[in-house]
Picture (cartoon, rainbow, N blue to C red):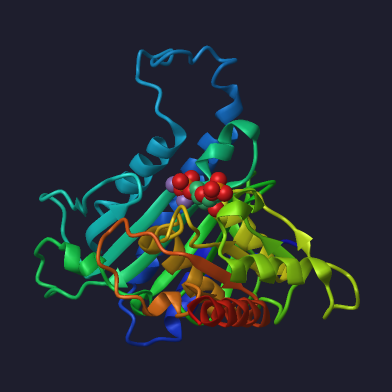
Length: 340
Ligand code: AHG
Ligand code: MN
Ligand code: MN
């Protein structure tokens, strides 16, 4: 039997539980889902570009062929600029904040996004994603343009966050802070249908996801932690499995369902790690915490970091709560040893 809990219906029913809701957040999520469908279609066509003669910089229509991450950025912007609910946006693909065109109404929400995550995987047909994060503006809601200040809020202030994964199927996962819900796109009739109700991350997993090629740059605490998982002294002799796709969305999605930890650490080369606080770490941390997991920068909760700039990077250790507690312990013990 078909489950007719569409994303739209789910959002509307969620809204009914909050009599104070104005429906604006629902409208935003609805528009984001539309952008996701268009990006999903384009992602599915990615391998056909050469075959269909889209070579060089121009396609058959004489239009410039856009890289998929630029396409995704443009699509999100176009789907979100006119709804009247946003006052400002920011994207990983754009250096500065993005204003709402003056002829459209401006509302009380702020949208930040990573249009295409894992973009180095596109040509190999490996899962990629889109990540989004929504805040309420902090400047007065008087129709004026939003500012950088509206964007630079700590992750705890998010009112919703989600991601889309373009994998063996396309899924949209979102939370408004209460429960995490996953919807699978039915390619035949283009609807997101509820497939993963109230997702909870296992308390402890058996998977670690980290780019182990960077081993020589790691700090001693991290080396010891990963060795500990491999030695499996605590886990009936069975080591953890290593799984690393290289798309944060896909790696964290798998760990959300199966349990485990995803790490993009600070190391000797990159003291702030690689991933972006505003577009990647905050939204993923909000989702994982809503599913019962944890996310830290090595010591402190990701969601409590006061951002200073739009494209700020931050180390991240995120996943099952027991696994995050364990890595925190290893890092703390070694930091003490290093300073003694
Ligand atoms: P993006 O494609 O948005 O630039 O993000 C890529 C990120 C992230 O998805 C992934 O976890 C990480 O880069 C992988 O980095 P390494 O290749 O250094 O492991
Ligand atoms: Mn990314
Ligand atoms: Mn990206």
